[in-house]
Length: 138
Image (cartoon, rainbow, N blue to C red; front, side):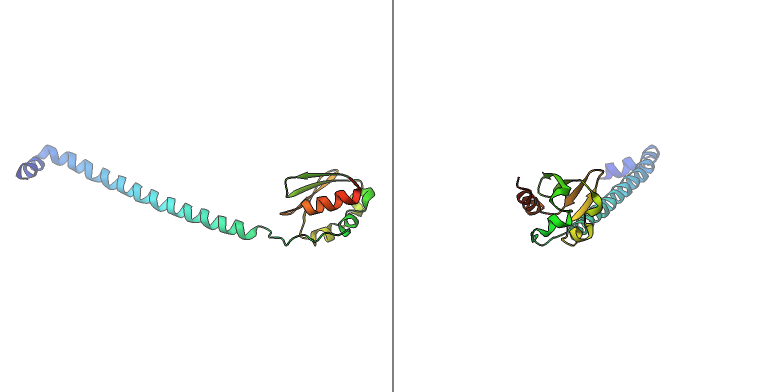
């Protein structure tokens, strides 16, 4: 123990110690700062996931009748149906002017409009697809 104390009491060893202590303090500060930043990010990600889950449209099961055919302008206005997964239904439309978008939206279905087709989006759009498919006789 006395040898260690006498070792640090030499002048040249104080120079190393004077350099090592600030470096250690800086490294400790960087480590603490990194831990704080990472915790804030993980909390922000958790909050964003909670917000995203709250914003998901939780729709009630769709009640399907022949009114969806009328909202799309009738059977003659529906040229082609294409189901993508369980959430998107592509409907190729002949005339967009006779489509009643507000009534479709009232069924809790989001609508994306493209140049020649509508994309109907819901958590489970398959019942709409089946209803339209049977109405068209396909």
